[in-house]
Length: 293
Ligand code: AMP
Image (cartoon, rainbow, N blue to C red; front, side, top):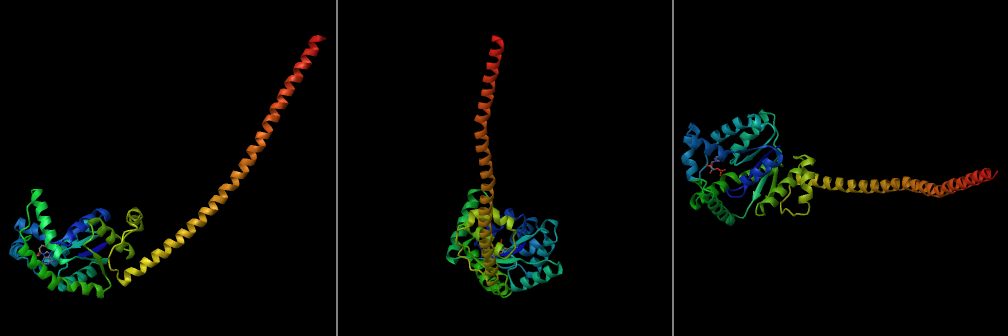
C-alpha cells in the first residue's frame, strides 16, 4: 500500500503515519525527518537545507524529490509506504507521479487531514511542552513565528495539491480534529473503502470501530466501494441467517432420531432386566425342585 498524508504542520500527520506503519507493516517516509537527519549529519544536502528549514521555508524540489526517489528504492519500502510531508508542491507531486510510473508503482490514496487552523498553534505548543518534559531536543522550527511561516507556505504551495489529487480522484478528506484513535479508524475505513487494505485487517478493526462517525468527506470513488461493501455485508447476513436456520434444522433431525433411540433403549432396558430377573427366578425354582427330588 502506498499513501500520502497531506495536512498543515501540527495536523497529526506524523502521529497517524506512525500508527499506520504499525498496523499495515509499511514504512513511513518523512522528508522532514530525512532532512533533519541530513542536517544533523552535516551532509551536503543538510548544509543546503539547514537555514531554509530553520526559517520555515521549503527546501528546493529537486533535493526532496531526489531523497524520496532513493528512499523508495530501499528494500524496506517494497511492501509499501506512507509519504509524510511529501509532496509539498505541485511540481513535487508531478515528479512523484513520474517517479512512480517509472518504478511501476501505484499510489493508492491521498489522505488529507483537515484541521482548524486556530487549533494548530495550541497543538504545536503542547507538542513542544511534551518533548521538553521527556527531555527531547525541540525542533528549531517549532516556535510560533516559524510556525506561522510554515502555515503560510502550506497555504500557498501545498494546499493546491488538494485540488491536484481530487481531480485525479485520489483525495480523501478526514476530520483531523477528532481524537487520535478516531482519526486512525477513519483513515482505515477510507482505505478499506478504496480497496487499499486487506479485508483481514478490516475484520480485526471492524469490531472496534464500527459505529464511530468519521466526519470525513468521502470522495465519489470512495463512496461506491463502501456501498458495495454494505450490500455485500447485507447479503452475507442473509446467507448467514439461512445457514443458521438450516443448521438448526439439521441439528434437530439427528437429535430427534437420537432421542427416539434413547427412548426405545430405555424402554427395552427394564424389559431386559425383567427378563433377566425372571430367568434367574425360574432357574432358582428349577434348582430347588431338583434339590427336593
Ligand atoms: P516537517 O517535519 O514535515 O514539518 O518538515 C520540516 C521542514 O523540512 C519543512 O518546514 C521544510 O523546510 C522541510 N521540508 C520537509 N519536507 C519538505 C518537502 N517535501 N519540500 C520542501 N521542504 C520540505
